[in-house]
Image 1 (cartoon, rainbow, N blue to C red):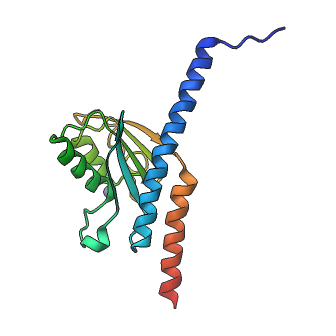
Image 2 (image 1 turned 135 degrees about the vertical axis):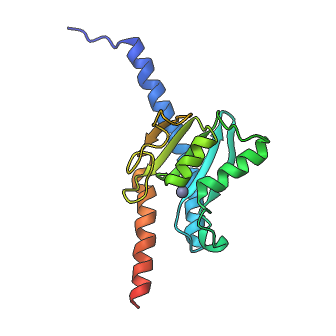
Image 3 (image 1 turned 90 degrees about the vertical axis):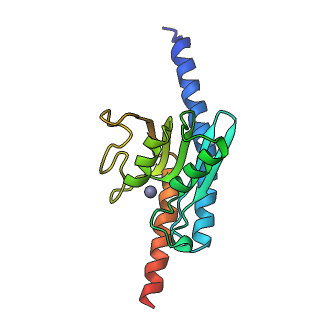
Amino acid sequence: MIHVADPASEDARRAKEARRAEDERWMREALRLADEASAAGEVPIGCVLVDSRGIVASARNAREADQDPTAHAELIALREAARVRGTFRLDDLTCYVTLEPCAMCAGALVLGRVRRVVFGARDAKAGAVVSLYGIGQDTRLNHTFSVTRGVLEDECGGRLSRFFAALRARGKK
Ligand SMILES: [Zn+2]
């Protein structure tokens, strides 16, 4: 029997691969910002907000430098995107972030009406998109976003575990 590939499923497979490659490309930018954060002594988390043309805003965690409990990468990037665009309605943006957003950031992504959220590592202790809550998926809120998880997960999570291992090692000295 001759196997003939179904052209429709072949197209779907190609589209999926292209999207994965695009997701990895932007996640690498977020990882670069996470590295900037750890070099500055911050927990390594980076975020880029992207539209169809490219990066609109990007940020890294700055909690220590700012001594601000809300200085998370996503929140800083959202504020910057709204400033650049001159509107809080950011409904054509995709958020790429190395760690699953917390309750505050997931809430802010709903308020900014972001279209899609892509994250690397899951956060079992504070993640509010899939781990502890389903903010962004809960239709009781007036906006939902689509979620893609696990993009460059090992690289995103590895930076966090190395950062905290180094902190613990320093603490023991
Ligand atoms: Zn957050």
